[in-house]
Length: 314
Image 1 (cartoon, rainbow, N blue to C red):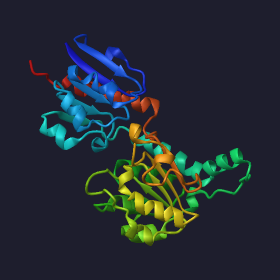
Image 2 (cartoon, helix red, strand yellow):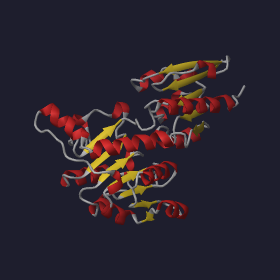
Image 3 (cartoon, rainbow, N blue to C red):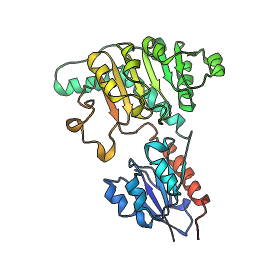
Image 4 (cartoon, rainbow, N blue to C red):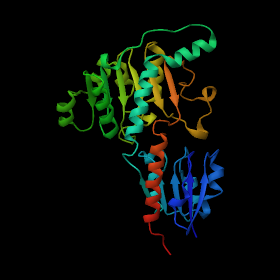
């Protein structure tokens, strides 16, 4: 019988699967060993959890022929080169998380501009009672690194809210969007120096790894608020730590981290020295942007369809 492994903290509608498929669901995998123990018998893998399908896991999965990543950034969850070498088909579910990520980004913009993380820390410490008036997003200059589906939706939502001072850097220019929303193309260095808020919605890959480095951050607005909803590795961690440590009014939000899942040992064993920074300067979340219930349900249904449509060798 064909055996499918599903990971991810969400409910599963078993009726989506035909009767000739045996389903194994690990809702919240705690370590690699839990997955390693199951992989030798697995034919299909719907990866919706926090794990990374490494060389070790791939070598263990001797019957694995089909992997579906629930999301867009396959490289963040699978060793693509090695999986391809082993003849494993890789697919994902692109563009289905656009509204969820845009909604989450807008919420984090408001929360962080209102200094909520800093306020939480101050109340717990009993040291300060922060009531600083927050700026409206319509009054801010906002830059975008990447103007694909998510970046475009974010720009559209901000445009509807009256934000008229927007810039973008992308590997390709978007003249139609420039005309529709008045958004202006800029070089990365110029944009970093002139905007109040920077939203990163760019695919993580070898080409974009450490795109924002010490050279780029050196000329950045000393009060820049960065919201990275893509791969953390788009920003060089050494450069980011230096920038945040030397600019007390700067801030960065990252949905994800350089060391993730079981590799994240917390602030006391952080090789990058970022997790010990105050919530005034840095906030990290665990890939929450796309975790909207309806979105996850739709993405899972699409992933199941990819599995069912993939013919297994007999």
